[in-house]
Length: 158
Image (cartoon, rainbow, N blue to C red; front, side, top):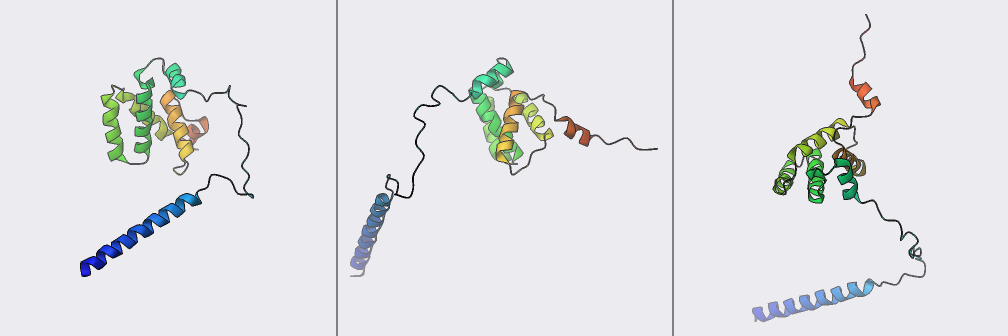
């Protein structure tokens, strides 16, 4: 008798879940409401413009180095980002893949050194990603003169 009640309760719960799921799918209507007007699509206005090809640009800047390979760039930038965020376990797992693809390990080191030298707000993820990309493409870049001047101590007056 008790088992029959449990089966009946489970059946009722299953039907309730199916009804709730079907109501959610009907609630996601694709038509906008009268008060919600979306801007019209571009209709090919910018069809001739292509976003810059990041990989081709890096290959041009790095001069055919293995660091310009798409897989090396993708993994390498993530390794540097993870190192910056102190997620060392994940960074080392990515670094293993980076090495497996035959990518140059020294490029990670010089890129990370370049990123560390720059003044970056830890909360600004877009700025961090831009700096990583900049340092990846040219890891020998120097910090701006204002930062370099602030880093050198002024001459002491006698």
